[in-house]
Length: 228
Image (cartoon, rainbow, N blue to C red; front, side, top):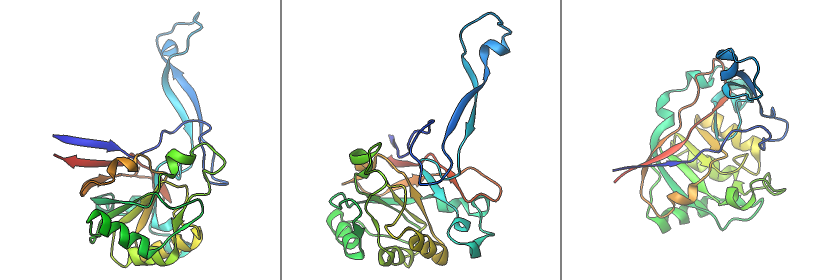
């Protein structure tokens, strides 16, 4: 029996976005009443919505060209699909506080505690419980994050990506992005339901991006799949 766990936020107008990124706008573009030529009706049943949003909205993946200008050609549509269809593990770092760094030792200890090993081409998810604790509050933008040394350590293990619950992957956000670009791996932000993966074995991780020409990232419907 297959178990699928949804790891993605809802997308809706007014949702939190990172700093100066585009706000989400959503409106009804066509109604069923219009299509059925019902002219004297007060109801508007959505048939098509119009969406305005940035590539880095909600649960999303960053393209390599987002990491720094020297990677301009490595857009989301050119990244191999194998990067978004991997094996995954989830590590418990929920004891980390607001703004606190996640270091190499923290990751190593979490692996030992859960008897998990980081393998080449893995996606490593970092559970901090930041979403359940702070989403929609003033502390939402101030989560724990990977240190630059921990980011480089993960990249040197040739993983495909790591994923976090926060709006940015590291406390030193720009440096973490630069390391990802340098080492050719990526990350997911704004993940949810990671608590449902703690204490469990490896899973299939799937988070396919939209094929946006020249895109710097894309919203994803990230899932963890367990085959029982």
